[in-house]
Image (cartoon, rainbow over all chains, first blue to last red; front, side, top):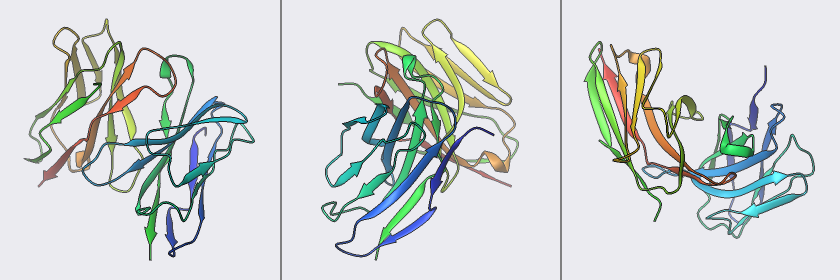
Length: 113
Length: 113
């Protein structure tokens, strides 16, 4: 079955630690996205990539970094510079033109301990 | 400013009853409008997607309507089931491809027996 796989489902981070969230898709989508979801708020875009080896900052990129070395993979690193990282993180992919085929992963819940 | 407003913020209904969720938007230029269902701790799953020329679309017991003139959409759920308990998110896409998805904050629906 085609889809997007996020791992791990739950992740705990200590103060000052970097952590990396995995996102893999086998939908052959060109574009991939990372969103952050906080209670009572809409999804906010962190980073997106429309092509391999290229990515752009979204609305809340500070304290995060990404890479896009392969079409299938778009990992997100939450750095120690992100002061409030506790949130639900969602990865998505789409066919670039007209935003069709937009599919979400099942999410990773990150908690600072 | 591009915005998507959803109402009500939360809703409680008895199993078997119908309900309607509202979405108003000020996104321009408009490309399409989607409704997603998000179960707690999971990624959003697409229910319907409508373009400018479509004014209604159904997916089982879910029926979405779109009035592009008034920039309003509704999601009607018929004969609700306990499994309908979730957050319902309205998402509007602006005409350019890539990142131009504007997310509403969602309506939390609770169906009780």
